[in-house]
Image 1 (spheres, rainbow, N blue to C red):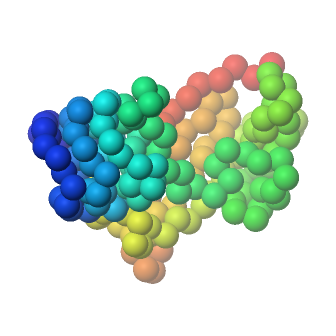
Image 2 (cartoon, rainbow, N blue to C red; image 1 turned 90 degrees about the horizontal axis):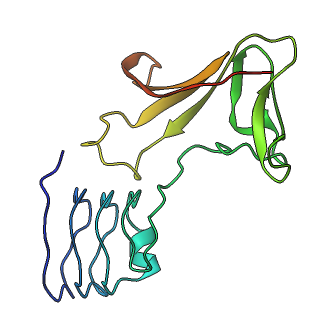
Length: 183
């Protein structure tokens, strides 16, 4: 975890590009000309600051950052069709390795879509290769090619695997686990 950094200045020409500024406080700072390109701004405090949307969009992550308008920042989604778009074919971005999965409107909110196991399937695995070259700082994750696997049965687990150019798994991390009761 990064040390907390408190910045109190008129930061007009400072370059924060590629910096790990997680949990930093910029409260009240004038940041209109600061460079935040590919910086990690996760959980940073930008309350009462002067900063543009373009500066925030150039960052690697603003997930859970307190933004000047009082909202929390959202992280950049590197997964293609990770939110289950009903207008995009599943196989356009995902490889179904096991089982049968479809994309269909959610029963809770018909305007939203979800990945769904076919009625006779008890489990399924779908995966996607993500190239992180040029958009990811290797101090956060060492590998430029990763494979994201979603394992679905009576729950969902997401596994992130760092791979070399030959496809050999070099590191693996289970990033999320969710349990669901299917009716």
